[in-house]
Structures are given as C-alpha cells and as structure tokens.
Image (cartoon, rainbow, N blue to C red; front, side):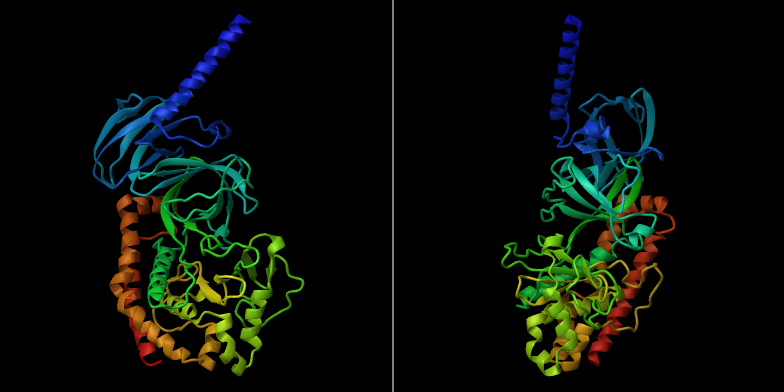
Length: 507
C-alpha cells in the first residue's frame, strides 16, 4: 500500500510539472491532447512547428525573411538538435539570415525513436488537422483537432467538426473542407471564433483552390467585389455587403503536408449581418444546379419541397424547421410571369437593381459563366426587403474554365434572365445606369493597375514564402509555373478591359 501511495504521489507531481511547463514555455491549450495521441510539440516563439513524417519535412511560420532568433520550447522530445547543435528547453537559438531557400537539419528523439527532418520557413500561417478516422467523409462531420500557427498570434488549438465540401471538389485529388469550431469534443457543441481577424463565426471553409493555377482568382474577385460595394455605399447606392474574406495558409493533415489552402468565411446570416429576430429575419438562398428555376426560366410548385427546391437550397435561416420557399418563389414567379407593365411598376420591390448591376459587371469582367444559374446567392435584409444578388465561387474565371483550360478574353457578354428582363423593359433608364456604372468603376476600381496589383500581392505571398514551390511538389499536375500564370492573367485583364470598354461605348 505504501509503495502504491508513493507511486500515486510521483504521478501527481509529474502531472503538476507538465502543467507548469506548459504555462511557462508554451501556449494555453483548450483541447485534450491525449484524446488525439498528441503528447509532444516543438515551437519557435510560441508558434508550433508541424511535420510531414513521410517526406521528412518540418515547417515553421515567421514574420517575413530577415535575421531570426527564437525561443525554442518543446515537450515530449529529447535530444533536440538544429544543425547538430543540441538545444535546451526554453532556450534561444539564432537562425541567422532566413531566406526562402533556407533549410536546416532538425532532429530529436520521440518515444525512443530517432527522427530527422528538413526544416523550412514560411511567411504564411500554418494549419494542422489531426483526426482518428480512416478519412474525412462528405458528411457527417467528424471530430478533429485543429491547430493554427500564426506568427502574430502564436498557436491556438480547437476541437472542430470537419467534412468534405463541394460537389466537383470531391472528385479532385486535393480536397476542400468545411469545418465548425467546437467548444468540446461534441460535434454539435459549436462556438464562434474569430480567425485571422475575420468576423467571429463557428462555420468556416478550407478551400483547396485546386483548379486555380494562380491560387488567387477567387480571392481577387471578392477583393474587387468589396471595393465595388464600398464605392457603392459612398455613392448612396442600395447594397447588401456580401464580400467574403479569406486568409491563405499552408495545411498539414494527419502529419502530411497537403498544400496551400484558403480559410474563408461562408455566406450566412452572421456574415451578411442579417436580422435574427424570428418576426423579421432575412433569407439567404443558394443555387447549386442548372435548372429552369435557378436560371429564372420557369417556376414550379413548392408545396412538397423541404430541403431543396429545383436546385435552390436555403442557407439562412438554417434547419429543416425554418425552411420557407415563399419569398424565393415570389421572386421567381414575378420574374417569369409578370406582365411588362407590372414588372416596370414593381421590379424594385423584388430586386435591388444597384447590386444587380455591380454583379453583372463583375461576372462579365471575370467571365463568370458559372455564376448566374449555379453558384448564385440571393438574400434579403429582412422578411419584406428586395433580394440582393451575391456572388460565390470564382475559381473558373479570369481566362480559365472549370478544368483550367484557357478562355480568350474577347466576346461572350454573360447575361441572365433577371438582367435580360430589366434590359428588355428598361424601367427608369436601367440600361443607361448599366453604362454609367461601368465608367464609374473604370475610373478607380476596374483599372489595370488595381486589378493586377491585387493578383501580384498574392503572387508575391506565394512565391516569397516558398508556398507555391511546395504546392507544385505536392500537386504537380495542378500547378504549372505560377510566374507564367501571373503573366497570362495580366494579358487577360488588359484585353478584357479594352473589349468591355468598346462594348459599353457602343451600348
């Protein structure tokens, strides 16, 4: 009995020492590391280092490339060495001048096993996902641990529920995911968290940007959309702010490097600041299939609809018990069946023309063929407001189609039935407003320098961090020379702007 008591005391002391060590040298964690078998870590200045065991790659995040000296903290490892120099825990190490090509040898022992890696650095944040299932399914979400290492914030770890997302993305080698931040190891116990300074939410996207040879088409499109909406607000136009923000990261999945991803917001009630009181909340609907109803060519019965209606899905309010197709049915029915006289008199009760015109200009600039019958979101600010068109999913744009094949910058003015009806009836000089808005945008936003400056800022991030090189090594069939792709987009932007100028000059 005495021996057992001594053993228990020693275990208690050991546990207390571990807690003190975690508090003194590393981050505070809010997950149970034992659940995931995660009982070791290595960190530089409180930013955890992540490992690809198969390729013996180690990656750490830093604040740009310069002279770098960091506090090294670790737990669960012994004989930690960098370039054969053995390190003490909570000690300082001078890496010297860090450049994109800098590689260090790092080795240690873990559970009696000697491990050796090649250490590189990135200026992008790093995300690690650890789960215990055979794979991440389409649905339902499975429990995982997510660690986010950001040089400005250190490392934060959460439980999350994660699943694959995107119908077409599921067929590609590099998957995209949707995830919810959890407050406990229960996949329905969600909580709101702000990631990378974005609006606090529990529901997020991890986009693999697999078909985008520049990795940035979606983000640049939303950056432009945000600029357009800011300009529209200054001009007193009627808009519903719906630009989705995102942050590029490099991702490890179960100790394997899987490439560049974009952590981004979803379009939901929180993102669009919709009212939440039951008596006056707004609605968000998303089209996911090409049908007569999603293209506003026809209208069908909704009395037997629950989860979806002819290619439309309700995003907000969420849950089967809140499904309501009446507002969307009224919009489609009005666009399809109203007389010209009724349409001219009441169109602004159903659709925000200001936002529709901006949407029309954006999808024509980027040649968004896939964004007017599919990947279209319509939303209302409250129960009785008009609908606002909100863009979504811009991967197959800027001179590339859904399988990354080239598309020339000329021809093909993209229209859709809501726009066509307004142009045909032309209430309150609609067509003149379309032309006027084009030239407004061309003054400051739709300029060669502004658009290509946005692309170049991401291109610089990918190349300077070495992320594009690692992406190419991991997914060699998806990404050609990113520098060549950058030049291809420059040429597309120049030619497309000239073409559209001529179109609207003769409109």
